[in-house]
Length: 452
Image 1 (tube, rainbow, N blue to C red):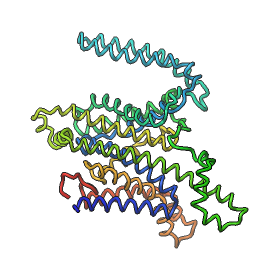
Image 2 (image 1 turned 180 degrees about the horizontal axis):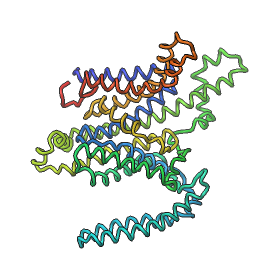
Image 3 (image 1 turned 60 degrees about the vertical axis):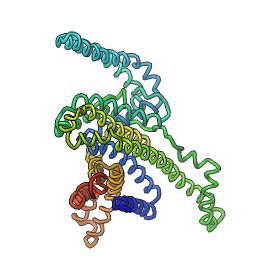
Image 4 (image 1 turned 90 degrees about the vertical axis):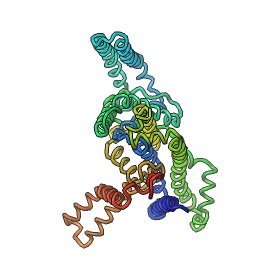
């Protein structure tokens, strides 16, 4: 058995042990919640790893691509608001058509006549006409029951379809961004992608007709059963009664019905989260399989050769810019899929929650700690960092409580530490990153073509 195989086994075994500790020590519902968010985080980390680990592209605009994936869930799975569609749907469609047409015509005029004046005049005319239709349409749509809707809604299609659509939305945005910014040097590429992601978030937050802005969208359809529905099904109640038969027999007959109801409620929560886990694991395994095939193919070896030495690869006739664009689109598409999965799991779309700390900094820490260039490393990094991020707060509260237990309960130092215990997670992230960089600079699971 190779040293690398042993390290993989020990790493995943440790993660399993940590999850089991939460299950037995806290609750299985909390354990599965952490597991599901770890799976989604691992998929996000894989998207970044494909860009950075495979091709050396420094993309810090992950937040924008995950937000586009989340928006796709709303546009695909939510039912349309017919009153809003009737009030301004056609005008908004006209505005989008005119805007697109002005872009196409300006591009044609530039290619055909090389006239900047014609391009400028076309864009100006397109902007004025688009703005006329857009403002009227947006006001009409947002005026329809703004407390509960005030937006167009979606297509009412199955929510799982939105995961694919989220990847396509993110891929389309990445193609456009990549055509503009991939020629930049690494540090300028980082600045450009961060700025563009902030623009995407700002649009989503402020265009209420599209996504209700910061008023959020709730009641996202599920791909799994609802807990209340499970509790009404006979086979589920019989299964719970069988599992908890020993405990129920110890209770008086008069209390068994209420106890069974409580057990069914807890079991339904666990089963629903297990269903989500099955879906997320299937997506993660599919992405790992496809990414591994790509990495081990001639295309993957070419991408790594470009990463290691762009000048030499270009001298060998490789189109560096084109390959960078391909890898940028693929990684962003995976981020879009993970964003759609997260909104589906949370059951709501909250544009205000898209902040760089969660959707940029943490994801990069996952990739670095896990091991850039290694698919399994991204999975490990996603699990470890998200687990620590979640569990650091209760641990910090416990640590603050124990370390100040000798002080009076009203002591200002004790109160300050208890009230700010949640910030220990930031210290944890920095400490983990420093320890890994000191003792394993290539990450917990380094790239396999490097020596351990």
